[in-house]
Length: 150
Image 1: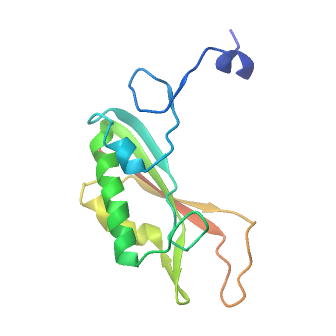
Image 2: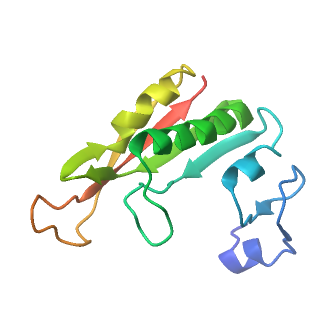
Image 3: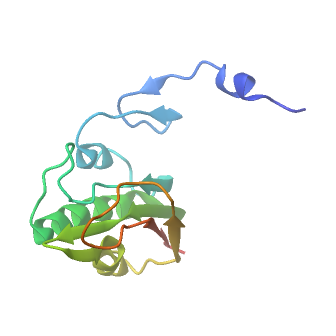
């Protein structure tokens, strides 16, 4: 029997503000590390994230690259801990720009993931929109690095 989207989403679905294995939806407003630390070991099937790129947007504070990588490493460690043996992590990142140098964040973060013996694939997402750069080629892609434990 075919179900339409109204039927699929008309069920009473509670949106939890704290992680609970019995809930289907969690919407957490706060530091992701605080949430991740409440998730039991090996209980997640899929982690999808697009963390800030550390380029100084209004929702982030631009950090020294070493500090940014350490922050990402802390989050990655918690994600790996919470990921089930058959689960996947999809980490979408772009480029960090520092004094005109363009640094692909997937290449900077790959060594962090490799510590956990994870890898699956690298996906390039190309798009046509965005701001145009005046002193370099405009970035028209982002990378999704896909990791699994098995």
